[in-house]
Image 1 (tube, protein in one colour):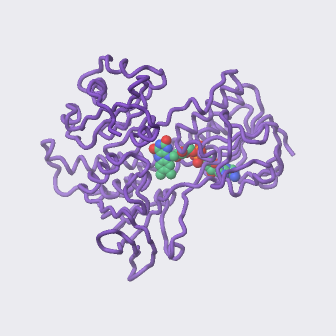
Image 2 (tube, protein in one colour; image 1 turned 30 degrees about the horizontal axis):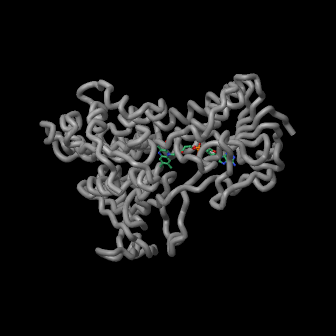
Length: 459
Ligand SMILES: Cc1cc2nc3c(=O)[nH]c(=O)nc-3n(C[C@H](O)[C@H](O)[C@H](O)COP(=O)(O)OP(=O)(O)OC[C@H]3O[C@@H](n4cnc5c(N)ncnc54)[C@H](O)[C@@H]3O)c2cc1C
């Protein structure tokens, strides 16, 4: 048995930074990784998908050349092998960077293999047994595959296996109309595949406001993505070399056919094979590790960070978990999970930037609220760029003047939302944003305008 001061399981978005901080403070740290260094974001999540989204955007703009006053000779030809190679290059840099930095870490030892608890302070990796007073779990998650009749009989893709695709699917079926499904769906449509997105619920991205779902569905449809909602009774089969998905929709044909199927129906935590029972760590019904406001599990000396604790499902939430743990352990700075304001983006084009509460959540809270909204076609920069899909919406509390939330669906919405987010962190009343002078011409310059035109939120 080898004894360390700390063991980190998983090298996602929290583990590597935490390893550097702990080792930098003089602790002897073991880092265990069973797969690719850098985890989901780097290898099969954010980095490769946003690299592919960038290729798809370039193709889209090239096709729209006439709108901007140029022509490209002949048909736009997509070379999926080169698109994949670009993606592999960009993701590979991050993957190798994480691996190199951990393997060269002073006071750090890297173990490559599957980690499993033996007891609250012992972990086995292959034939090695490691022990430490402090253990940090950063095991992330993987694609959740739903129990659908016939699914086990066909070859299907997930966000991980999509990374190996270097050809254009003849017709891509996407099961799941949420963030991952929409990003892949629009991207492959732009690459040139017919795409059908099938969603069990009545609308896409159901956690967003209805106006957001409607606008996203509208621009995807305009690009030729077929969207089938209310697919309440799904089954899959293979017929004449095609994948056939039977639906039970309110309207339209009752089955869709395609050459490939991407299952994008959510994520599940990698906690089922971690031996958590032997450590006595409690999980919720869905397998997420329960943590307190400082990311501590119920077992003293064990923390859980990132997607596996169910308190966030993003790179920035995982990294923020690291910051909270490091601040509490090493800096005497009492940072809390509950200080965090929800924020994320959907990387369709245009993207959706989100901060704080949705309109639906504000209504449910029963507050007296005000709302301001502007269509992107009224935003001069969007008009100049020829990218006028979407709208921006901000919600504030009429009594306390607190900024409650915002949805920016539009070009650069993922960037401009940070003006609102930072004002929320500063706990500034909305009047501060209203009086700020922003730069012309930008998307963000319209934030004071939106706030200047607030109206009561109808009940
Ligand atoms: C397609 C897709 C697109 C995404 N896009 C975005 C985006 O644009 N922005 C964003 O913020 N988020 C995005 N996400 C989410 C983001 O990737 C994750 O939230 C982020 O990676 C945080 O993960 P993590 O730190 O919890 O762990 P992960 O990154 O999942 O890493 C966990 C690591 O632990 C290892 N591991 C697991 N079990 C064991 C074990 N028993 N022993 C040893 N090692 C183990 C795994 O091999 C893995 O390397 C996306 C996700 C997907 C799937």
